[in-house]
Image 1 (cartoon, rainbow, N blue to C red):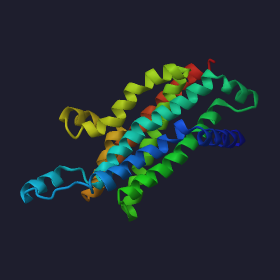
Image 2: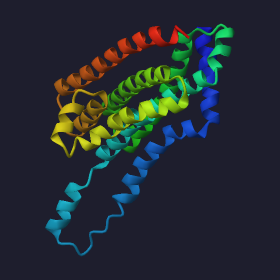
Image 3: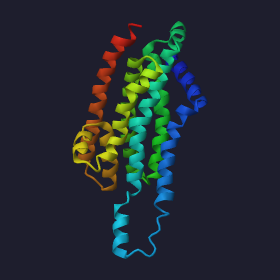
Image 4: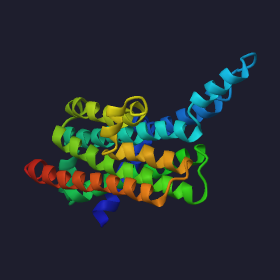
Length: 251
């Protein structure tokens, strides 16, 4: 437990001092805020016929959808690249060797690192929820969906970080998957084939949960979405254990 706390404090200080990582947790809610308060509200429809203006407004994403788009990119791309970069950097710079000499076990290190990522993810998720106008029970359902996606991306990012072993390899390995998970939910709105695939992915289900809250979906839809998300996490957890035992414990 002491090792986890020590790692948590170390990584918390490192993230605060590292703007390249910290900005991941600020940039996406900021973009969502700008898109909601500036882009849509500044849309000038004066002089446009009423029926055409109505069609334009209907085609524009509403506030929760705009937030969902940025939340999906954050959860699917930002978090994976952040934690894979942190772990691969520590492995590349041999920082783990010094931590091991101090008595920190690899699993304690991973739990501490993940704890920091999830802590900042909670704050970012709350910002998304407030910007999206969620309130009451809907706010906490949205938070649960965001944190479920955050856990999935944290585990996946840790897998890539361990597999890569250095920052350069991690960037090349994680980017294609991060782009698919981050932008997949947005592209699913325009392509049915992508939509079918994203229904089985946790970031796709995050989008479904958020949209379902806006449409007052039934509990069955929500339970199904959370079931798929946590099935994803379970599979990623098993994969992480295999990678951890095969790759890290042999170092």
